[in-house]
Structures are given as C-alpha cells and as structure tokens.
Length: 265
Ligand SMILES: Nc1ncnc2c1ncn2[C@@H]1O[C@H](COP(=O)(O)OP(=O)(O)OP(=O)(O)O)[C@@H](O)[C@H]1O
Ligand SMILES: [Mg+2]
Image 1: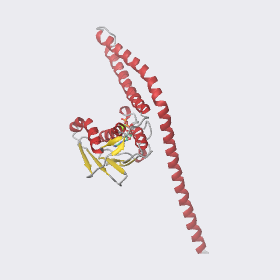
Image 2: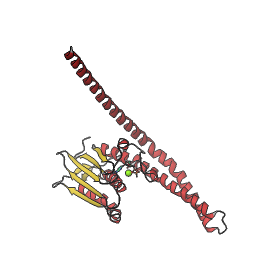
Image 3: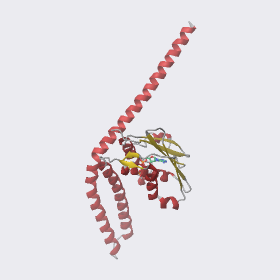
Image 4: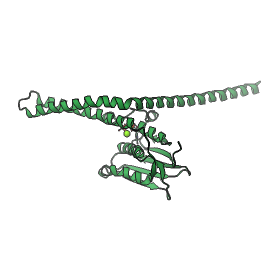
C-alpha cells in the first residue's frame, strides 16, 4: 500500500514538473512571437511614420527658433526670460523626437544586406575610435582581446558597425568614471565568430532583463529611445547570428554576439 502511494506521489511530482517545464517553454515561445510581431509592425510603420513626423517637427523647430529670436532681440519683450526658457524646452523635446525618427528611418531603410569579407578586430577598433575622446575624458579603460589567427567573416559591415556601436554605447552609458569594458573576439567553433562585450557598470535588474530587447524599452528616461537593442537583435538575427546577455545588478553586464563565418541563406 505504502509502495503504491510513494509511486503515485513520485509519478504526480514528475507530471507536475513536466507541466511546469512545458508552461515555461510555451511562455518563452509566446514571448518570442510577441517580439517578432512587434518588430514586423515596427518595420512596416517606422519609415512612413518617421517621414510624416519629420516635416511638422522641422516646422515646430523653425517657429520655436523665430519666437526665441523675437524674444531675445526685442528689448521690451514681456516675460522675456520665461518665454525663452519655454522655447528651450520645446526645442529639446523636438530634438528628442528627431532622435527617435532618425533611428526609425534608419531601421526602415535597413532592408537590403550587403556581403563582404570583414576583419572583426578592425571593425571593433573602428567603432571604438568613435568614442575615443569620451573614453579618455571619463577615464574608461577599454581592452580588446583577440584570439590568434582570427578568420575574416562574410557579413554586412555597415550593419555590424551599427550593432557594436549600440552595444558599446550602452556599456559606456552603464559605466561611472574609471569603469572598464572588455571585448573578446574568438572562434567558439569552426563555423562561428563570437564577440563578448563586458562592462563593470550598473548592471540590469532581473525584472528588466526580459524586456531589454523590446522596442521602446528604456530605463534612461529622456536620453534613451529604447530602440538600440531591438534594432541590434534584429540585425544580428538577419545576419544569421544570435545575441544573448547576462547581467548582475551592481556588478556589470555581458553581451555575447555569435555570428556565422559565412552567411547561409
Ligand atoms: N550594458 C548595459 N548595462 C546596463 N543596462 C543596459 C546595458 N545595455 C542595455 N541596458 C538596459 O537596456 C535598456 C535598453 O537598451 P537600448 O539600447 O535598447 O535603449 P537605450 O540605450 O535606453 O536607448 P538608446 O539606445 O536609444 O540610446 C537600457 O535603457 C538599459 O536599461
Ligand atoms: Mg542603447
């Protein structure tokens, strides 16, 4: 009798475990579908919406500039300082909108992929050159470690620059003065190249980690559009690769990008 009870209890435990596993798998698949749908919608809408918004934005910017000029140069302009401060805040909101529309326009345009042989080490060094002065100014150390006999890969240079620019920018944003970024480039197997970007910055809270690749998710308030990582993930996957992340709050973050040496269509 006891034997039967133990068997039944073990069996139901096993079934519960299997159900939990399958629930988790289903949740993950649903999450991926939701992400893919969001990206497809974003891709379709982005270019046209950005175009539509750019014209009125330019007009708002121009008119705000005129109000600013009138208020500044008219000696007796009433509430001059208040008006100038209000116009400044209009201009900075317009700037933010145009940052978003520029990213979206870039995203909409990015349909065609070009193939060429790429030396990953020099691509990463080119990207780092963009941020050279910021690194020096904030005393951030950047190390690039490369495996000996690294092969070139066949991929799209412009798109990959965009990927690593986004990831390295995020790492800079996460760092305080005197922070550190380690970039490792290696072949985990004969078909792939792997680039890891590790920072010792603020890290990502567990509750945020599942959202960071979603369009418009940002913890940077006014200064972030939340499009960097969703665009990055989209490019990496279109190039046949995979991007993953590990992070610990307060300790730092590591993004891992795996790309095929040769793109298989
Ligand atoms: N290296 C990192 N360290 C800590 N948090 C990160 C890091 N990379 C990304 N994140 C988190 O992921 C969020 C989404 O990143 P994403 O690049 O998509 O947008 P963003 O950086 O906020 O805005 P944008 O890229 O437009 O400037 C960030 O707001 C931040 O919370
Ligand atoms: Mg970013």
